[in-house]
Image (tube, rainbow, N blue to C red; front, side):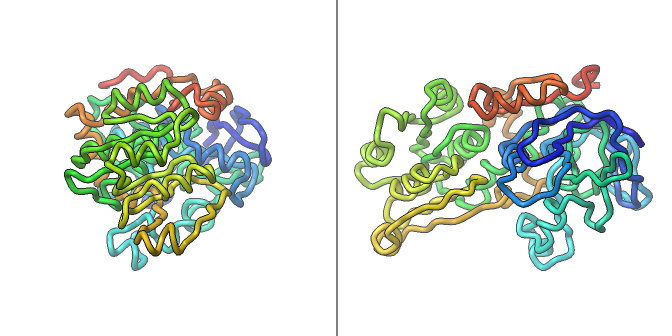
Length: 373
């Protein structure tokens, strides 16, 4: 089947719209998805630039939403016409998947970042040559094929254009707090970086009952939005020392939890130094940067922990419906971070994401889609 897709030909190249990409035939547990929209994530940009080892050419995109067009004979939970949000693929069979932690799937890299389908076959080809995929999904396409485990069914009365980023950015930030850090009511949290992931973490801190939810950034407009979305305090670290200010706000102790979404060396280090004794920092950015700390004084004596979290330790089929319920109740207003772009504006949207002009760009792939139908 021939489709339209945004292809990156080589490391650092711009997205190029192509209409001659061939989509692989469906397999028994596949869903064919008519794409409605897709968020652009900083992970897409990291792979486009080559911050991780991947193959080229490649079709990126992993925050897709769409409508099921066809189902394979072994598909049990979906039917034609279902509305879905797409996320990562966990094999379901390894020891970690069986423990209920698919983000730690032992086959995670092979299934999501190898450029091919879980069985090793090509997802896409162009002129007979393989085009790599991402997350067994590649949502920067007009049509894609995914496994049943990639998809989460959502109500048809919701606007699919808004929902795609729940599959990665929003579930990563919120899941880091709700699933991994698990703050108790009355504890405190600071989030460094108020992009989509950081704001999701911040809103999750508010939902969890944290009495101090501190947002740190260098862009005043983002901090203003953070305040609107539930931050108790905001810090512009360009004009204030974030560590000292956080200690001032917490009676000199520091916060119980921090989340760094920036991947910037100095900011990651500050997120650790801002912790109270016994606190935990989650560093969750896709970054080539490293931190430099005095482990004895900064970690051991203070009994602090630094952890990494992949995809918010989420089970998409559980976490995404939970976020939608929070959204319906006015507790998780993620759509206030979004801006819509036409599919062919992908390079503009990606540039706006990189510059900070737009927090969460969403590509509207099907301009004829009408919400609620």
